[in-house]
Image (cartoon, rainbow, N blue to C red; front, side, top):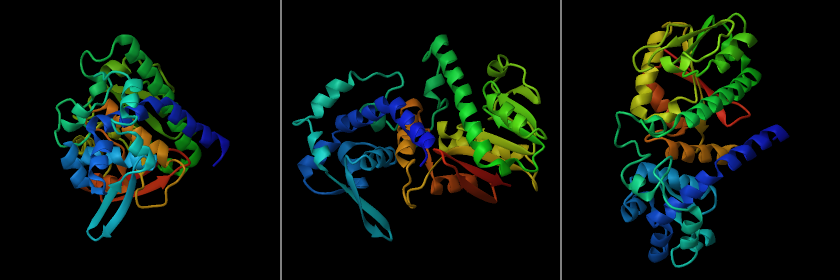
Length: 342
């Protein structure tokens, strides 16, 4: 790994270090270390779910992060049917309430509802996808954030779009071959689509976001700003791009979005370009795995049913949305590129 890639991972770790602490805090609040301590033997996901009162889907994501970071161990005990169990480590033994668990809870501070994650949240189904919500975006629910924070977040999204676009342009320029029109769904102020149009001047760019967002967007050569709702309709184009959009939403909502994207492209020549994290649980772990799992925890904290998805989960989404084929291209980055075809 080169120095730039290593530095990128370090930034993610520093930025989301507090989120990692909150995940450990939730594990202690759920009583996971204490359950293992009292049981004294390995447990399956189902057994652990029953013991702590947390849905398996969200508990699996929590345990995936904790095992990757050495707090628990995971062992495959059956391939067909697939079955595994978790067990303690010296570190998890220190996190019981009669050891250093209470110390960690005190250091993590009081539980807060704003952008937080608590044992109560998890037991109620947050991050499990089992209870669809009318408004799944916790961060943008009415009254949650003030105007100053919203501006800060929008500025961050513009910066994030710039970094994401640079990775795609530098690593996979072939993705844009033959594309004459491209819609960036959720494109914020148009930073990313502007970079694509500049790098590939044969493309006509459309920046598509909520009306109040594109109203504030600056004029960009070769880019048309269009306001609308991706759950209702998406402007027609040769290709639709979704960069860091789908991880905010449940599978049900993602299928709705992807179906609208499919309707907006040509049946024979169109495609949907998805730039998102792809977690490869079955392949050899690479240097980005830890950062990807950390981002998944951040998404669990910031949204109701959003998540970073595995290869199998992406395939299920694309099949359910009516796409006939797909390709997954990995970059030297946390994100990968998925090309989906009708």
